[in-house]
Image 1 (cartoon, rainbow, N blue to C red):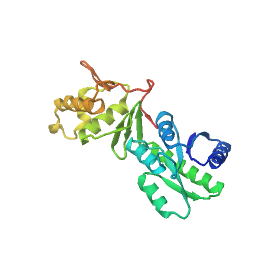
Image 2: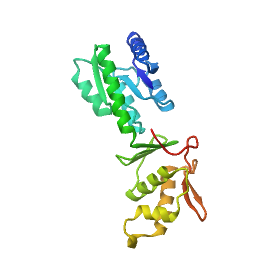
Image 3: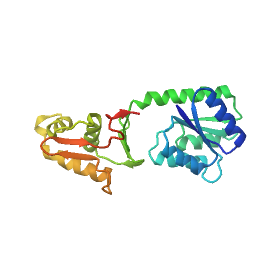
Length: 232
């Protein structure tokens, strides 16, 4: 597991990195909010520890930007103990937990472990297909970090394609999945929904996320390595 530390106080940052490394985690550290935003977007982390009082891009703005990009990274914020306003602001910005300074190393370790346990339990609800992320509990979709608004039927079709990937799914199978009652079924709706999904997921026409196999059906082509859709 890898932990991102974004803390501008050099001594405290190094102490955090040392203790977290000693606990068996990989660590990446920075004292700059802009670099923290870049690292969180470029590399896979299991959790982040972010100080709210960062110079330049503040910790609050960093958290807001991460959440706006669709990041589900578990975040522990570090705050001044006597500033309850900071704790509230951090949680409202999207942080998962907070820890007041100064703090005991044992409490930091305990909160980090709890954060990782919660993330592991909720991860089963997340489908990741390359740049596509689907939260099956919240029924939310992100493409390359961008939130994608879908109708109920668009979402159901996309989730089914993601769960079946890389297999080709026939139009009949998709129709059966979309409609509970036989008299409601209209196979032409599948074509319409696929067209909408293509435009919403790939407005610039770069990724071609859904492939049509003539006479066979449709296949989600976002593979991020050629494996079946995985829970993150």
